[in-house]
Every structure is written in C-alpha cells, then in structure tokens.
Length: 370
Image 1: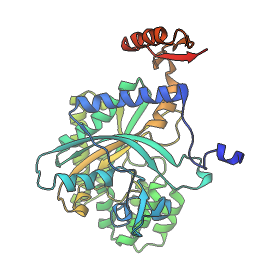
Image 2: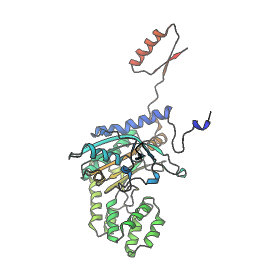
Image 3: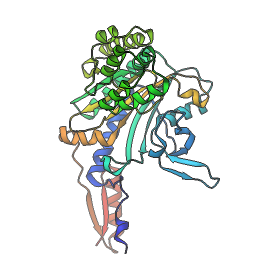
C-alpha cells in the first residue's frame, strides 16, 4: 500500500471527532443571529467560471486560484471568496427586484497560497450580505450583526476595526496620483508594508505634503485614528464624506449598543478591489489573521448586470473555533455519552426495538454485534 495516500495534500486537513462537534457548535451559534435579523440561507456552487473571480471583478489574484477545465474547455475555479458568487446569484434571480435582499451563507473557500505562509488552503466561512440598500443604516446593521454573531459563540475578547476606502481614494485623487500608482500604493498598505509604500511615494510626482499625508495613511500601526485629525489633513469632499459616513455609522452603532467593540483605522484597505466604502475586520487574541472581513461593494453587482448597492461580511469559522478553544473552552457543551447495545443472532429483534425506542427519544445508540 502507498502510505502517501493516508495523508492530505499541503494546505488541507481532516476534521473529525470532538473537534468537528465543536466546529458544528460554533457554526450554529454564528448562524442563529443571522436568522434572527431576517437573513435567508443561500448555497452557491463550490466552483464557478473563472470570470466570476477575474481581475475585472476585483477579487483574488489569478495565481492564488485553483483552476481546472470542464469538458467544453471552460476554465473553472474553486471559489476563493463568497461575495462575487452571491452577487452573481442576486443578479441572476433578483434582477428586477428593487427591494433589499438579505442572504446568509456557509461553505468552504479555497486559496492556492504558498507553503511558507503558514495558512490553510481550505477554510470554512459563514457570512451575510445585505443587497439593495446604500444607506448607513445597512452598514450599521451588518456591523452590529457580526458583533452579535461573535458574542453569541461566547467569544469575549475581540474588536472590530473600521475604515473607509473612499477616504484613501479621495486622498490619492487630491494628491494627483495616477490610477496605477494608487493601485500599487493600496497593495503596499493592504500588506502593511510601510517601507515599500515610502519608497513608492518617494519616486512619485507629488508634493512633500501629500507624500507625508499618504505615509500617515500607510502607517503599519494603524496611522489615523481620530476622524477630526483625518479631516484636517484633506481638502477634497470625497474623503470628507467618507469621514462623515464613519461618524454617522458610529452614532448608529451606539444605538445598537455595540460601539464599545469598534475602533477606526483609516489605513485599512483590502486585497479585494471591489470594496467601495466602509471596510472592516475583526481581530481577537492569539489569532494572527482577521477572524472577520467585510465591507461595502456598491459596484460589484453591476459586473453581473444588476445596479444595486451591497454590504456584507464573512466570518472565518476555523479561526473563531481556535480563538474560542483558547479563550473560553467551557462554552462548548459536554458531549453526550453514546449508548452501546450489543446483540447476537438470537436477540437481534429485541435489541433493535430497544435501540429504536431510545433513538426516537433523541439518544445516540450504537447497535454492535457481539
């Protein structure tokens, strides 16, 4: 026998036994608030056409996708991200619907990343998307919902950082950066690579003032936290409107009673280029990456033919499970002991009736031959 067949490929793993029980518990706890907010479940395919996640859509880079071909030679990919799939569904099935649509989803995503990054290639995500509402009230609903979902699992030590990509875009526009330069700078900032951002701006044809302001926004430690301070650094209305939106959002989050979980980070950007407004991530102790990512993507659905605003988030179930196991392991319910009933050829009918009766009462019973 080839012992290599007993192992999984790099970046994926088996989940079984008690760990899988705990994971299912976390998934259910995350899902309960989504249902209570009126979000309806939706399932999308594990693989889609390549163009759903193309560069024009603004999603994952091509070399990070798992690609393959069907019989008609179409290029297909395992989904790296749920948001474009949800956008495609909304455009296909709700093209003429002008009312707001609320979706909840759960499934696995796949990223073809390098071995040295220390990340899994397959992760379970659970999330929500609110489509058809441009208002700040939709932003507040989504942010409050993700906070309620995390709290519902029993996780206590987490914080949501919120930015607005329009502030950065307005600042780049005011500084006179080209679209290509803006893209490169955004890549540096999203990777928190301060030195690369500084080198890039050093060679840019902009004034020293704007070079300094953009470096503040690129600060790897968060940079601008005060909305008042941020407003004093810019003159353009695009950036000022972005700050006003954040101020309005915070007022609504106070109404929801979750403002103490939120802070601002105007250096926050994303590798996904489809975000158009607020953007946010949630972090907790002991987990290096964000356990939640999300934001507003008002132009994404138009790529599929539907003109509609949208905002949403994705929770990384595996990371949340890891955080809970470290922070609050007592939150998981005790596993019910499995009953075992043995039988032989003589008493099989009698033991089967006994096992069936217990199963009908909700007990877990294993019927084992002697």
